[in-house]
Image (cartoon, rainbow, N blue to C red; front, side):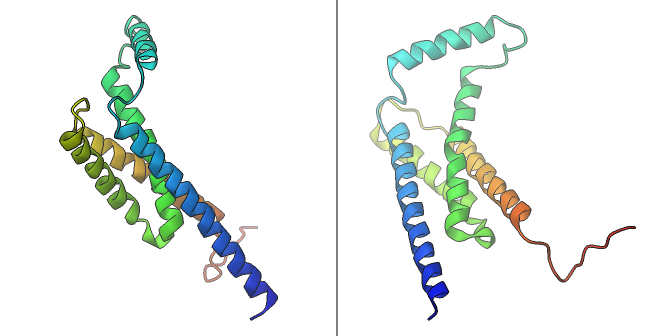
Amino acid sequence: MSRTDTALRVHRVAARIVLAILTALYAWMVAWMTLRAAPYGSDIGSALDRLLVWFAERPSTAWITFDRVEFGANVAMFVPLGVIAVLWFGVRGWWAAPILGALGSATIEVLQAVFIDTRVSDVRDVVANTLGSVIGMCLMLLLAFLLSPPNPRHPVRSEA
């Protein structure tokens, strides 16, 4: 084994360790946000209420409702899952992202329904979370496409 091969293996192992730590931190953050009695404290709740009232008073922003903010927050919370799935399974394993998003979200909703009286389980959350994981996956696939070298079998012709 050459020095280059050894260095490459060390870099891959180090990258996997960092990815494992980031994955664990992300999973902890999602569990912390979704599996406690309230998603946020009363201070954030009152600030959000004031902000939504402010939006409701203006015709151009009256469409911004709590349901839409919550849906958007659920989408945003699962975008990193799509990114992480592509990092773990590669571009060819893209299909893992929506599956993990749907299964992870369904698990959260079941746990909320069974164990947490103060939380409301909703199928729209599963849809939003799965959409978030698909968006993260698509961003990674786009990045992989943009960063990939051109295919040597299809030479680019210059029109002169």
